[in-house]
Image (cartoon, rainbow, N blue to C red; front, top):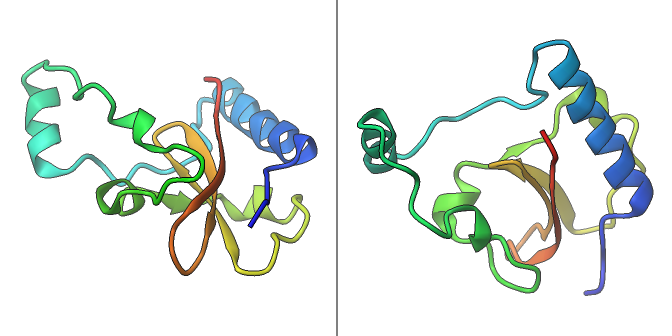
Length: 114
């Protein structure tokens, strides 16, 4: 399946993130880190290398990354065109990804600039 996040979708999503930064809101909610990583961060340790880079186009999103993902806020979803059938658009760790809903294959992904 060849489906990408369009330039218009990227512009709208980035605009929403930029607006959230200006108003002091992140535009996304945090589900928190898994317990082991939370302990490392609490101690001042950095997240393990590759934590965010596990979202690669054409790969299956790892379960631990998908579990941290959330849908985009409703106020941005209503401005976006309808997603292609069988796909979902999610946000995780400063990235937005379009996935095949059934398999969690990453069809496209981009970084949100904060």
